[in-house]
Image 1 (cartoon, rainbow, N blue to C red):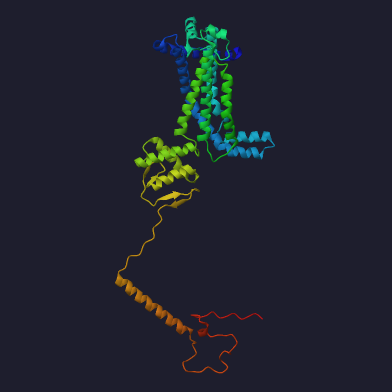
Image 2 (cartoon, rainbow, N blue to C red):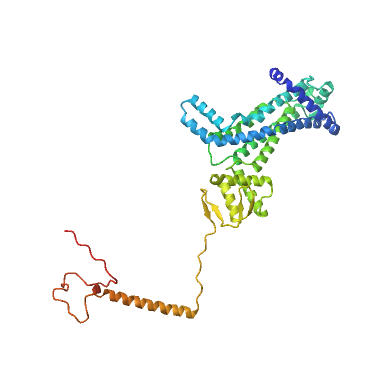
Length: 426
């Protein structure tokens, strides 16, 4: 551990200086030798570090979403070059370069705070062994050794012997109970953070190995924290528990207000936005306009939740413009089907005929009966032979022979002119 401490010795002095400055403030409130003064100093150090790492966290979110978008392409490359690992790696690097994606960007916040973590560990280890380090002099060292958090000294560990714990002015039972509770809370916060990321903020339409990997990490990280936690001092556990709680709250904020497209979190977000916009009849903030503008710009590439949002606005009589403004719609309302095809919602209704009076119905019925009688008469006349006259007998050889099965048009009972039969093939 001395080798690792020497590697991060350049940051040990700044970390110890920040802790001392916070301790001077909290010491005036709670007392300089109390666990509240030193514990809150460590918590404030975490908050200060995480605020400075917010730009890296934003970059991490963008990188993670870019990686999720590339998962289908990465899967195709893996299947295409599954027998050629070198070509597979070359194609992967080419894909990262073309899209401007860096897989290591998702690890930036953890890598950036690692030096602070080891520096704090080195400071607390010096307190436990009674050595001054950084700007912590003998007076501050004695104050820190007297500080207890719920009966456990800052420098005590779960695996310490009873004699070492008694030298710090505490009992082994108190140390192990406090450290065990903190380790459990630390593991739970890590598990919950990863779980809400997998269940709420992942595009459910894409099934990739990346999702399986994240699901595995959801169970691996808590186990790692439990194993390493028993060797961490109480002060380091305070640091790590605080940073896990910060990450959990930060993740909840991002999932609620800036969810991944196609995820369950986006469905809930767009449902809240639809309710807010329909209530006020317009987009009120710059952020709402930016969200609506991005959805409108996608066109046919909108996912299911985005189409549902646009259709909901249309049914409410609102129209989303390309600049993100939502207002009353005066044109014919159209909605999008599941495949993105626009269809009209308000199809023209069938017009009902006007109601007629009794005299109009009677006159209309008389005219209809006369028309039917006239039609029957004309059909009957058309059935008679054109060359036959009343009272004139047909020539002997001109009529049809009895028993031949041939019937005249009048005898057939069919109305109207008949189509001549085609000659039979010989």
